[in-house]
Image 1 (cartoon, one colour):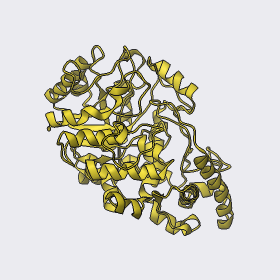
Image 2: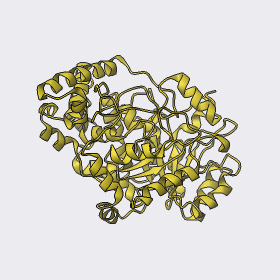
Image 3: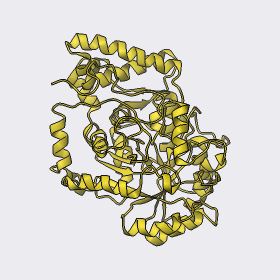
Length: 463
């Protein structure tokens, strides 16, 4: 029976391209990344022949993913980028047992930033199809749970209505799942009706957190979380409703308008004011196109501004500020030095219990490649010693993958995993993996033109 997707095996299992999540202008790949992709394609052909496999069969195997990561290592090393690397034995490219041992994990994977784009969405084939969403997230990846989030828009052009999000959750639960999907409620206090609508979101839809974009507003102006007429009203409303998780987009600026509101300068201020509220900082303040280096409190941007704000306001490590990696980790795969500094700094300054995995999928297709990359990524000993970064041990990775997020979301992981062992999602996943057929596609905008078209639908502007 032929595979429905990519029968010739032309697509790499670790996807490295210009796709964005619709919140920032796509950044074209540089020469090192393009060379890495070419090398991975060449090695895939060679290693498939060595194993007597067709290209598609090889790409589907753990050896295919291992071979791709090893090619990325080689290209980066030639370019002098050795601050981080994918810790994969070379033999894994042709030894299925070794590859599986390194790439197949048993962690509890809780993706705290997922997206399902409904009927108003702009995307490629079947992006707005809930069956495709379930396949990408729960069959083609090792994701155990996900939080469905939103992107900013006017209400009439919202890309994922709460009703559509709840429909997807109910689809999974109707399959005898174990609440594998949680929901965010959109709460932008500078948009008419959003604060009033929080009551229904909490009571009717049972949202687990609030999602806000401080740099966005219907008139192009954003807000700070410590502004009395907007941010503070949002926080007080969340507290009154008993849903004390606030997920706030920081970094990945939409443009120059309200750029200052995209920075994480206000996070430490409100975290100190409201120690009973959890602030999950989406993207960790990362700015696409800016390399991250050692922590610099004077930089005033990126991950460094998040750390500065938290530390200068006296918020302890592992307290109520969480650094989330959605799109940040996916973008950082381009540059192992940047990736090493991002994870190293966040673990060191925000805390090993407060760094959270998120994929921003399905904009990037299935998140399995991001999971496999994080399972194998390691910070070089040189950077560990020089900057006091932690080694990425299996224990630390397991915390980032899901154990950390269980605390703000009040999840009993043992109970969740126990109930999931025999649920319909798990049984469907086991049956599917007898003959998997992932597409290895990405769905988000890949060019500036596609990004602007997406932005126009949402009623946004780069100005």
